[in-house]
Length: 135
Image: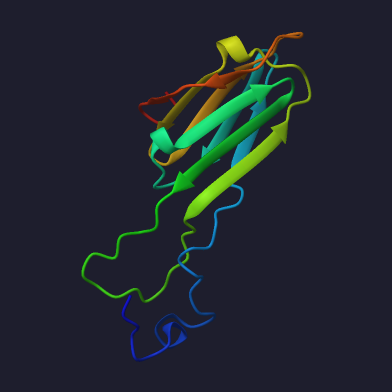
């Protein structure tokens, strides 16, 4: 990558860019609970659903994946803040989920998990379906 002659802070003020290979360690998530289960919405812009895995083991839900770095095309990076690389996020649910009825969709940079509640049950990997966000 070719560097610009002036520091990034000159153009935008403040701190310089983050390293382009900075790992996205834990994507942000919103969790909503109702009487039937949980809805988890992870923010993972630019990720390929085929590079994301969701596993449920007991009360533990684990999200793993990889997001590629932004393609600079033929221009110069003036600032790089979007993290790229491997990520992982593990959450402990307050009650036992039903992994057999858990559904995942990815669209518009959001991974939406619908996790129904269930007493007991064994774990499984959750397939991710490409579709419309929030659908």
